[in-house]
Length: 211
Image (tube, rainbow, N blue to C red):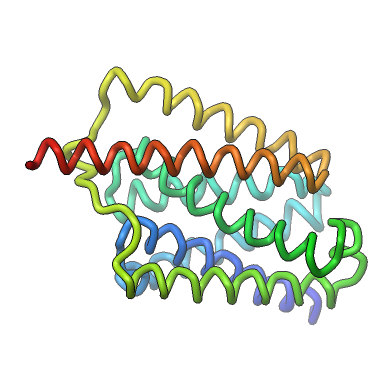
């Protein structure tokens, strides 16, 4: 019982950090949808608990988390589905890179970080704290992207982005199955750079169109 409550609490810290990073990267105030987000976080953490502890398919939990967040931003925040996916994956990969950094610097390997429940909780707490603090700094400094999503609905050039998103979701499940830190680092690093470049380019085009 205590272990289950601990899992839910520290997982909530993680999903809160991911949510905050996504919101701040696109200049949304995290508190604006916080109550709806907390309900979604509960759903995410419940499915993660079941996938990890009941049916031993933990490698699928991150993929399901991303998909739930995508539909949250589409249904609640009212972003077009494609941009919901872009925002979610960009924020999630940033959080994953932060966590991989701490795994490498503090524990040396994923296996060491997962060797005890306490180490796992420490990793989750440090990563979540960094993510929440980082999102607060981003929002306060006005950093991030602020293009008009409604003006950027489907165009033929976005077929490449949609294909990339599908590939990223597919690879995410495979790489979490193998659970190799260097593969995850390369994957999340490349994904983050590509989506960051696309976001910067999209904002520049939006500014030029409005200008």
